[in-house]
Image 1 (cartoon, helix red, strand yellow):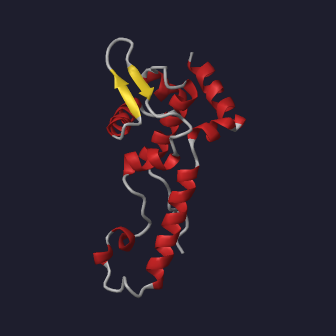
Image 2: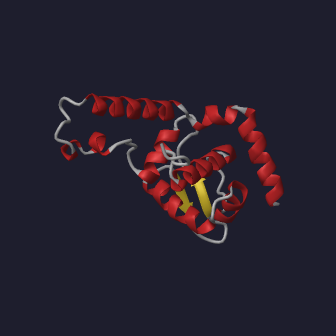
Image 3: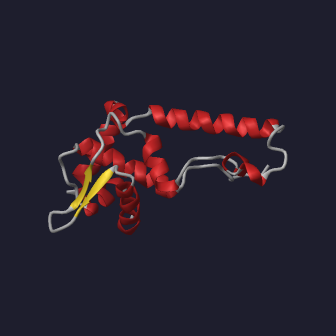
Length: 154
């Protein structure tokens, strides 16, 4: 076993979650500047711009142009899930090629390993689907961290 090798969410997925959490905390009627989100959520501004484009294409946020521009949440936080956000940025989650591309494996129809990968993927997707941003923000540990970040950025 190689030490230090881990399966993890991409940086894009992680930053998209941070952006969605910040916008959910602000509410749907608030336009927040890219600079403020980047500063408060420790996201490189250039990377945030790319992520925002993907979130906008998915209908999760609106990109508002102009001097008072920024990003605005389009989906109510109780309807926005971690799965929506992650898959808007990285595409459908899969853990192994044979799950997303069955033709990549000749043994697919009889392979118990394929079924394990598929079950694990389905369970991960369901867990992320059940986690909406309203419930996440109801946990005060998230809002305390956000308020602290906002104080530091001003």
